[in-house]
Amino acid sequence: MSDAISQTDIDELIPASHISLSEPPAEKEACIEHLLDLLVDADRVEDRQKALDALLAREAETTTGVGMGIGIPHAKTDAVSRPSLAFVRSEDGIDFGSMDDEPATLIFMILVPESGGEEHLSILSSLSRALMHDEVRERLHEADDEQAVQDTLREAIA
Image (tube, rainbow, N blue to C red; front, side):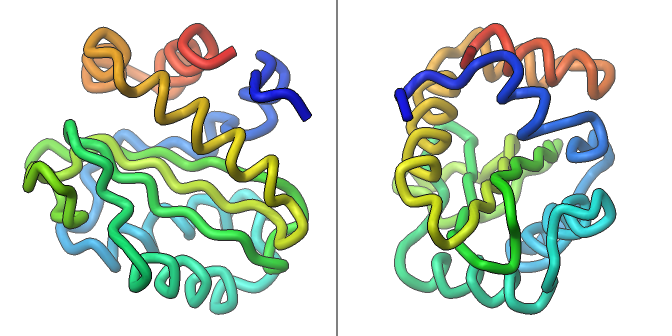
């Protein structure tokens, strides 16, 4: 698999049902559960507890707060059968333990099947590269609806 993610991949990875523009819970673990429930409600997760355990185990290894107001909790687990991405934003920010000590205001969750190692890295690297750009982060903060979030990601990543 190439490192590039196509526009079709974006639509499959993060349909509108995986995006919440409502304020998430202010605590990290509760926010992770909030994102996970977006994927559960969209029938992307076969075993919620197993997926949550994988996400929290990954959080325990090292922070998923990447800095610049971004958090990317992620895990590989056989609780999912296909790669999925969820998104929420927070006005106040959530402490994801980033190196720059800035709270995360843009939070993405990546879940991929246990066997999807390269795909996991491709999604993570493409998303991380896109979010390094101030303009992309600003557009995500200003998005009025789920479609605007998808459009921003499609243009920035695909």
